[in-house]
Image (cartoon, rainbow, N blue to C red; front, side, top):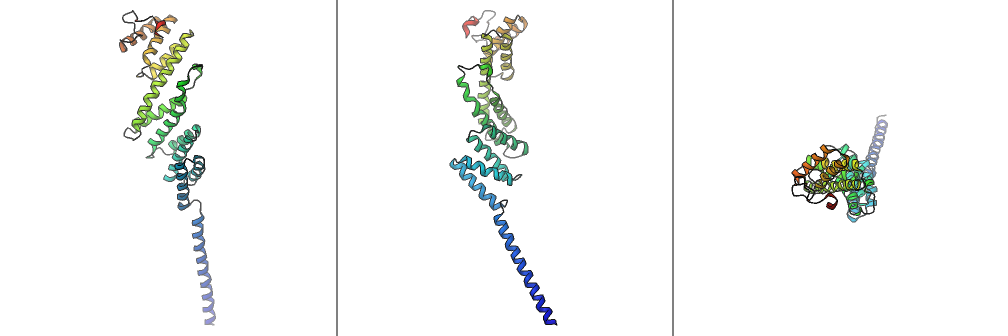
Length: 271
């Protein structure tokens, strides 16, 4: 009787050991094939980096989207989001790149890569819009939209203010200054456009916008002049005199300056 029980015990024990072994084998296989395992994610990210480096951006985008979803909330997931924005940028998908960067900025406010995310957002918008400034001829300038440039300016300014020691801060400062000068020149261009069409209220408003938003830009000199002339046409003598006084004080050698009531050139010869 004892022998039978012992044999039964040995059989049960053997079955238990086999089940355990199979279970361990299954776990190993599951870990190997699990798409969310670290090994699988590392392989995916390595493939994505290879595609980015070789310029295969469309393929990299598909891989990075997978990583972003599977590794959400991890450093790898954050890096995948930034790389995804870069890939969108390189494929001229500006809207997708901006949306991706906005998502990163919102979800990772304390990320050590925040300065890079802001720099990328500025760069994406900067590249999209500023090249158009050289093609104003033949366009109705009052219909041009400079929103992308303004968003780039905000991103670069935020980077410089929040991360002054960032490696990207010097370039962001240079780009921000360029955008400020360009946007100011654009506002003056529009103000001049309106003034020449005798839309003096619109001309004064656009010139005032330039003065208020871009007070250190070179174009402010002409903006003050247009303000003064527009107010003069509207019969607003106090506002006209204020604009001319600011112009004379800040730009005493300007060809637009009144020089004590006697302008260097008649206004119609200045343009």
